[in-house]
Image: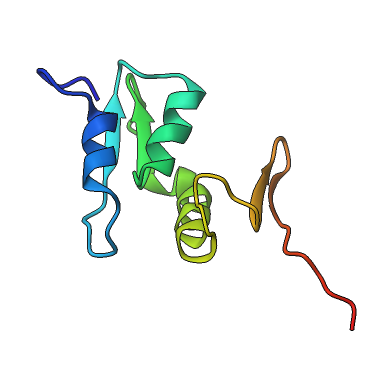
Length: 102
């Protein structure tokens, strides 16, 4: 995230997240807050690892979050402001589609 004269988040914003983009894994010791992790994942990162990290950490630790992010990109009008798949703090994710009674 901390590059010579550039900011990693800004580079990700400029690149966007085209479907054919290669996986992005952020490894940083600079931006360690939860907010930074969420921003990185919302900008298209497939994983966000902070240093120092243990060798026993696996990519699958955040696999649910990555899958939800991919679903949001496909289903949501605005993935950064989800309305269909919402995060319920302490519980996980909730599919909150409106239901019509016929």
